Length: 306
Image 1 (cartoon, helix red, strand yellow):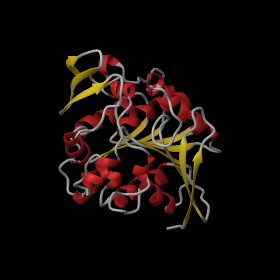
Image 2 (tube, one colour):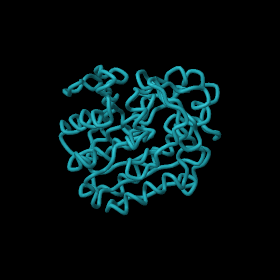
Image 3 (spheres, one colour):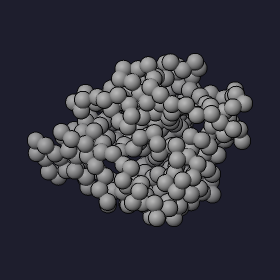
Image 4 (cartoon, rainbow, N blue to C red):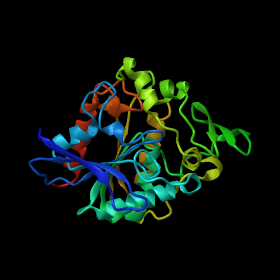
């Protein structure tokens, strides 16, 4: 593995995105890798694990990738965005503007809530994206069921989505409660360091109101793909673990099926089928995260000519 150099700063986007850059010291012939975090997180989930171990960003860089780790606009250290303006479409336009600044097309890696943003980015910036890796990715609104609304007021709505009931605030960020941290994000696997749960939970942020509303596809609000042409023959890998209650084999497998139906060269990777078991939703933070990163890198290397 290569030695790496690290730099960080604001990209020339409006608002300015905070980006961490990890560069292989010996150079690379591989495409740049752009890492997008999920809801309630920032790019730090790729930089270091809760137990202090090497994050995915460093691991991929040591494998020879120039890695760019983003904070969504309005999140983390990126430029502030007023809540009414912070929609999924806005997130995609800003990140797409960053992708346009890269000297060559990238491989886009999304996680969880950013999955739907990845599908919109392929639609709108497909010529700048060579391939997509969706790690437990949210589906596009085209195939995501609308949740049952259990209660609704002017300030919040309570919905049932999958195995989880969740309150979504309409004028302030929606936090992760203890149940969601332990049962959705971590789950019942054995790979998350249990003595780090408290510190991990403290690192989470609330999900801005409109983004949380859209993620639940409340009133059909999730981003949809309206032009499938950019997906034609686009290499896409969907990666799913076995202890992720909101991203089961059937749920994420259906995303891969839909992608193939619209013409993408999509593959579904259920980790136990590759001999990797015991992982939850936050697989990049778990004890065997390097093994999963190696699997992803192997797919990229075999799919895209250097």
